[in-house]
Every structure is written in structure tokens, then in C-alpha cells.
Figure 1 (cartoon, rainbow, N blue to C red):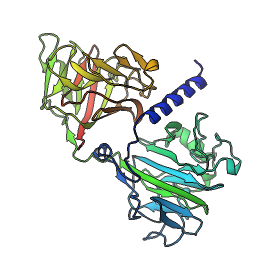
Figure 2: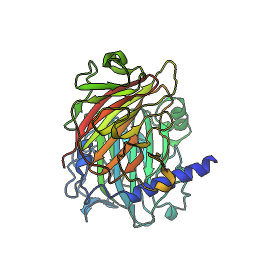
Figure 3: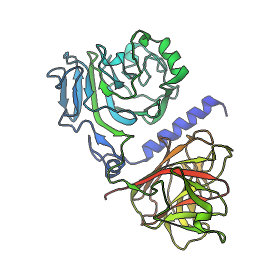
Figure 4: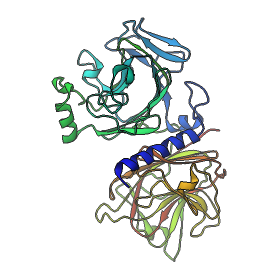
Length: 433
């Protein structure tokens, strides 16, 4: 399949998954229990601007910005740009925006106040009425672009003037990604030779310190035209989740027990070295939490051997129920190289996924796309089990979603399945229901 065709297929699957899933927030400017558990906070609750202030000001602008119909609206009143009172380094930001005909604005991040405007230090996710400005959807100044630095992918899906678009910005480990209406359209480094080259060819090369700060404010731009914002939420990826429980303390396997298909003891297969949980991979089996969990956000990092860089297989089993065996009744979030993000339904476990005619192979429910780092590098899993809804995210990208899953308390297991694999930063936040 050609790359262009593959991108289109991935975009279609992403849109199908987005439309198939229930809306996460039950009302405007609200958080679900799962979002709160995962560490999301509101930057606008529909009533207050307490999280914001004017650029180079102590207070929020007295003109130019207003609250209207659950939206934060900027509308040509000369209020100037606003920015968050808090600063962020690694974060995930989501919001909904819509524009009036001909409108222009932007979302800037890692902003400092060394120059006269936020865009002179902070990279920008563009907000624009493309058609009203006679701008092609894939122009580096079009909606969703990393303004003047990287153009949106040709899979971009934008909605017309007067309709809300959903934007998502993920900044982590000096890499930025933009999504517009569920489709990833920007993936760009924020450091190194590629980044330096992009800045050098842009209008930003004349501003000392542009894009250089590792930490800064989020800014919304007043460009003199009318733009509506709502559902503005953020999570600081450097902060622990509220009520977070460390399932692995980096020192011992306290809280875990094992089942192995042989005579070996847990310590013969699983060990701790320099804060990393190391699995030899043989014999087949798993370690599992002694405690059971029903509704939760689970985060962990994994990699295969960084020396041999040999691809392999493993998995995270959730809602596992006895008896112990290879393999026990559970839902597997796959870790096999190239297939991380697949669901496996083990021993009769049930779940429904969208477009199953394309993604179902026996007990397997395939991911929408690959989001893994090269073999030997660390990856992050985020597994959300919220009632019958289960979401799998690999390195910040949603790759699978199911509903009507079995709901019961069960153990969490990490598989030993053939080759060495490493785990770290295993933590869980319960979802209050």
C-alpha cells in the first residue's frame, strides 16, 4: 500500500473510532471521572477566567475577551493575548474552537515574556478560516499547522466556519504533535538539527530564544477577529496522577506474585536493576498484582533489550480472574513488537471494537495504527478501564478503543513470553464511579 493510501486509511479509522466512542465530557467545560483520575484539569470552566492573565499583565484583560454561552470569546476589542498563570514543560492540551468568517488566532506553548508578543518565543498551533484567507489546507499557515514551521498533513479534516473543531496538542520529550478532529496532522521535533533548520528558514529566526525554553505558558491569541473557545483542559505529564498508586517502587516486587510454566521461582525470571523491572522471558508465565482493580488509569513504560534490540512479545493483562494458567481469563493489551495496542480476548473475555469487520481476527482486535518507538527504546502505555470502556494509548496516541467489556475487579499481569523485556514507572490511579 502506498504511504498516501495508508495515511488516508489511518485517518478514516481514527474518525470512525472518534465518532463511534461516546462523548467523553457529559456537558461543556466538564471533566469525566476518568479524565480527573488521569490528571486532567480545566483551564476554563465556563464561568471563570481565573486560570488566565493578560500577556505581560498581572490581571485578565478588561476588554476584548468575554464569556458567552459557555465559551471564552475573543472578539476584536483590543484585549491582547492571554496566557495561563501556570507553566508547563511536557503536557497534553485539548480544546474546541470555532471561527467567524475570516478569523485568525493561535495556540502557543512554552511561551516566555522576553519579547513583545507570545509568538516571538512560543511555537504556535494555528487557528484560521482557511477558505476566508484563501489558504490551502496544507499550507504552513493553515489551521492546525505548526505555524510557519510545518504544514498539516493532507489527511487534515477541518470543519467550516461556525462549527467547532477539536484540537489536541501533545508536547513531550522535545516533540510536538497536533491533532485536529481526531486526526494527527503534525509531528515535529522541538530540538536538534531538524528543529534548528526549520527555525532558521522561518520568520522566527530573528527572535532570540524562540522555541528555546523547555518550560513556559500556554497562550491564546487575540488577532483582532472573533474566535470561540470551550472545553479547554490540560494535564501536566510531569506530575503524578491524583490518587496515583505506584505498583512498582523500582526496588522490589512487593505487591506482586507470579505464575510460571515451569519450576522456576519469580526471582529466577524477574529481577530489579537500577530501578527497572527486568524479565528474562522464559519460561512463559506472568507476574500479577496481589490486589485486584476494576476501574483505573494504568500507565507504564516498556522496552525490549536495548543491547540486542531483538523484537519480542509480551502483554499487559487486565481484569484477570483465577485460576492461574497460561493464559488466564483476561483482556490483553498487546506488547508484541509492531502490534502494541492490539486487544487479545483471552479465555472467553469479551469486548466490542469499532469496525470489527476490518480489525477482528479471531480473538484479536487490531490497533488502528502503529505508534511504537524503535525496538530497544522506551515506550509508554496508558490503559484506561472505565466501566465497559477500555482505551489503549501508545506513546500518547490512541490506538484502540473498546466498549461493553466485562466489568469486574481483576488482577493486572505482566507477561513473560519468550524474550527479555523491561518495565518501569508502573503506576495506577483508580477511577471513582
